Image (cartoon, rainbow over all chains, first blue to last red; front, side, top):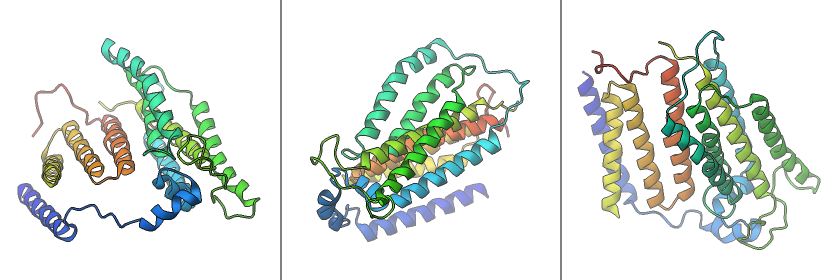
Amino acid sequence: MRRFTSALFLIGLGLLIVAIYQQLGLQASSNIGQAINTVAADQLGAANFVTAVVLGYRGLDTLVELTILFTAATAGALVLGTRKPSTKRDPDAGFILQTGADLLFPLLLIVGLYIIMHGHLTPGGGFQGGVILASAFFLPILARPGSSIDHHWVSFIEGLAGASFIYIGLLVMFDGKAFLSPVAGNGVFGELFSAGTLPLLYAAVGLKVGAELAGLLANLSDTEAVD
Amino acid sequence: MEFLILIIVAIMLASAVAVLLLKDFLAALAAFSVVSLGLSVLFVILRAPDVAMTEAAIGAGLSSLLFALAIRRLGLWRTNDAGPEE
């Protein structure tokens, strides 16, 4: 029965792939977003047009996305993140994992911060860099399960970053513009300090995502395993 | 280029079916992350590096980690037994 279901699933997927192949011809369409490509550089000054869309034209969507992530992380920690005080902790990992974690931690930190800071210039940005930051802070816990991150600091950073995202959006309204609309002052196209408020917004997103996911992972790994 | 895409799609399909058929939860999890990895390579080929980074970081990395922690929490993590139980 199970074999039969799998075979049916496989046939369906194959038909779907064939249908997509027939429709698209597997060619990357180059005329999608042609309109954005022509106006985004002048309007927002961000070299990465994806960032221009994510934070400039659709800033409110990003705010809602952050809210969804926050809700999911809270629910995950609430459901799975309880720990009996009597349970034993796992022993420390072996020499190779400990040394590897120590070596990788600064490297991952730099890569994460680089991706967040250059989100308006190169591919990447707050969400991707935030996940890398979270994994950087989770590695030491993986190597030494006894140690844990300071949850007060994590929630402080998370709240500060989330609030500053909203405050930047509100500050724009003093200029008489819409909520979260990008501020002018584009700077030189393609330089690190350019594109108005977009890098600040992405820094807030990156810190929030990083703190949230690091807290969630630490919470989940802190729970006891069922034998 | 189309040849490469077809190979990646075949690998993704094979590992997606493997997720269904494997009895070991950790092996199924590894196959699941192969699907995400193939998808992120596919995004690079289709010239969407932003989405590829998101898929590699969140799909292949973080969600696998979350699944692994959930498997450990639920007591389904068996690494040193004789084989899959029937």
